[in-house]
Structure formats: structure tokens, C-alpha cells
Length: 120
Image (cartoon, rainbow, N blue to C red; front, side, top):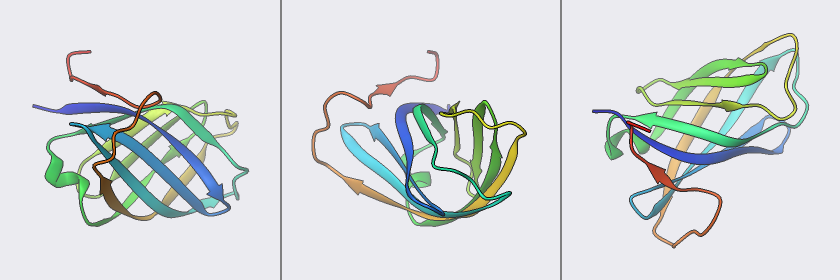
């Protein structure tokens, strides 16, 4: 049964994005590079939703691809998907692809990210 986790995505520098989600008390961070055509301005997804089938999917290095417009829709090569409203919205839509690696921290995080179940 799919699980979901709330989080955020931001672009710390051109061609790089960081996605952060809290899952079962641990902080999972997907740090990635991207290419986009046309090139992208800085963007954020302050209300990102990660959908995945199990913690094992949130490890290692993976390719991903997707589309950015008023919302983001990204799919990792091993199955997880990330979606949410884009700030600022892009028009026309932009195709994005890249490669990233998952990392995990057990530090308690307060505030911006939390776990939710798939029924929400």
C-alpha cells in the first residue's frame, strides 16, 4: 500500500534541487542535479507530497524526470513520485530530468514536514 510524506523542495543553486521529507521520525533528503529546456529560474515547492511504496525506495542514487508548470510532477526511476504546487508557477510547462541521491538523518525536525497516510 503506498505511503505519502509531506515536505518541501527548493533550488539552492542553478541546476540543483533539494527535496526534504519526514518519514517515520527520520528526515529523508533527495539531493539532485537537473537539466531543463528552457533553463529554469529558481523555484520552490513549499507543499510537496512524496508517494512511495516503502522505505527501501528512499535509498541510493536514481534518475528522475517530470514536468514543471503551475504544479510539479516528478517521477523517480525506481518508483517514488513527488508532486505539488510550484512557486512561482511556470508557463509554458518545462520538462525536467536529472539524477539524485537519497540521504537520511534521524534528527528530529519540527514544523515544515510531517508524515501523513495514503488515505489523506
